Image (cartoon, rainbow, N blue to C red; front, side, top):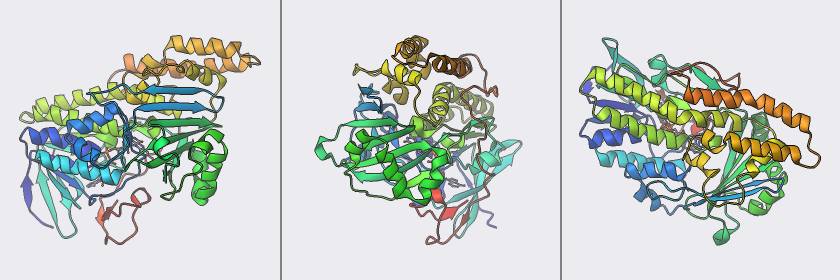
Length: 486
Ligand SMILES: Cc1cc2nc3c(=O)[nH]c(=O)nc-3n(C[C@H](O)[C@H](O)[C@H](O)COP(=O)(O)OP(=O)(O)OC[C@H]3O[C@@H](n4cnc5c(N)ncnc54)[C@H](O)[C@@H]3O)c2cc1C
């Protein structure tokens, strides 16, 4: 075993959204930042990668946007929703920092430019370097041990940031692996790239099609003309889709004539990728000399399309907070705790909303009528949910719910008893989500009605080991051919 010991100010494990976003402000402030990633970039990862304007602004803050726009992506300014009972919503996104469009960039193309942005800021990003353990001194995280194909060495630092994703080895090392609150997902994802059969006439919109319990996203992607189609369906259907992906795809199209009309004529450009492993969670995300950023600390159902936005934003905020407190361990630890509390306050509404949207099954008459209150106005409203312009509870307000309820009860042939039963059943979730945001304290473990039992974040990850590059890799990174696997 090598006895080489390096010194840095901060060591970051993971060089995608959260890790690079944290590295940029730290390096810009003149700190010595080492970022290690077991992967060699460009490399893909399991994600449907839609980014709303609120997230795109983060790419601008870190200096990556210009190069990303040079990839000629579609710039998407609208959100549309079509429900199978004829509901249509079309809204223009609220701009953030002058950015009025969303993006959808394949992760292999996007993340390599995030790595470049971190390097441009002055961070030392090392690819094919795997973190194996956290080093401790006097009860504080004081660095990491890393492994390359031929070597093993230690990097000592004042701060260790785990930005190493859902299967975070850093989380395991700091004894934060088991979430203190979590929720099982009800939907799984099956997605593929297609060309856009509408060509130049395609709408500049992230489109949502809701029919018979499926929610399907049609996302203009990169380069313009390519489209990502995502079927967010009952997680129980995913094994069947894996067994026969083309039959699963056809079933999705057959369920919704409007979707069929939109993309039925498209040419498939990739195989169908799928996952039903999407439990949402919060882990303890700060402690003496350590922090967990991005998915390492918190994951919410990707039905919300907000994971990258939060990883980028709270990666940046973590870097900014640490950059000015690194000199004093007590001040640093206080800043890390405040950062974690701010992340929780900002994400908790969306976490609960994701848990609810993740429930499988068709929209009820009540949900349809609440959604209908959003139609007929192009100004941002429903789109503010994805765009994180306001907490969900400030968008889907009690007034809006009452309006939807009255409409649902008055509809011809309405089953009023079923509607009232639904209201009664939904109340604990509504109250719980509001109470959690406004009243519950730091790292509250009081569960809310939106949360589903049976969540699973898998076994504690073992230290990564290197394999020859040609070997098969884990399902999540199947197209990225990383050189190390857990
Ligand atoms: C199916 C699916 C769909 C999604 N769709 C969207 C969407 O449409 N929009 C959106 O915003 N979000 C989406 N998300 C969420 C989004 O992908 C994540 O929130 C985001 O990737 C988190 O970024 P991160 O930097 O925290 O972690 P990751 O992107 O997971 O990066 C972690 C990095 O750490 C490295 N690493 C891990 N362990 C080690 C180690 N021991 N040593 C060195 N390096 C290590 C890995 O190689 C990897 O590069 C989706 C997620 C899933 C699963």
